[in-house]
Image 1 (cartoon, one colour):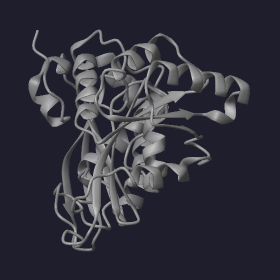
Image 2 (cartoon, one colour):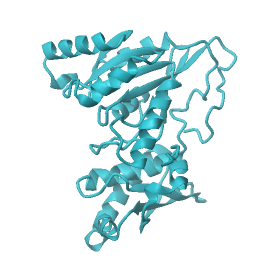
Image 3 (tube, rainbow, N blue to C red):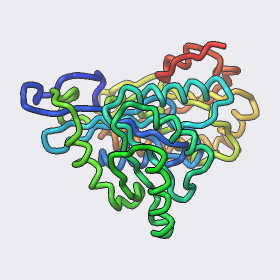
Image 4 (cartoon, rainbow, N blue to C red):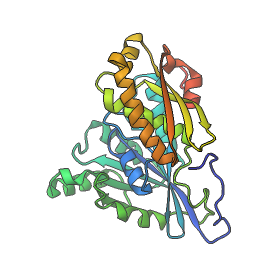
Length: 311
């Protein structure tokens, strides 16, 4: 896991390809699951709660002589609040800068209002575009083919893929195709890196995933987690201190749970997964604090890699 982004790899002088693939789509289309499946490891959190990916998460895949940089963008939806607007702006910004835009659609939802709005905007994008229909194991083939034809009639897609990001069905076809459409370029990251997300940031995202998995019906998605301390101990283990920030005292009580049982369970689940990624023993300490109106604080947006929307 690279702590420093955009560090040239050892292949910098070779005849190589490198480029960016932006995964866009509505919330819960399966973008994070797909990025993790392509990378072969967790680099982006997965949750049933919508809009859990906030910033641009990059997953790195080597395919032949090409390094593919997959950008898992926040879900695109009709923004209502300042944080919503920042996430949608970030998503479209990631698409504008990509070499290939890959639209992921949950095949079960079809061309609903949200996906139609995305298709309308994508039709104007001067980039190579591919369509990825996800969750194909949950829909009849005739309905799937009709969906592909309807979407292709609205946007000039270069290729249509039908996959199940969860089971892996069809995922292996993506990387070879995309590698062939990357520009000639040195690799931007070392060959053994799987993401440009610092470990401490990914650790915070993992804890946020566990938080939402346990409390998704009771906690607003504005709740966030920050890694305050990452300290390597003499025995090689790591002491990690994180703070879960909520907006109200009632939410704090929910996160802590009766006798502290809820936050202990979240800590146990997060500690195990962070330890697997860090490849060492992790001692995780969670604190829960109330930070009112944090969604209106420009500093919080900078920490998440988002541009603070004015007005």
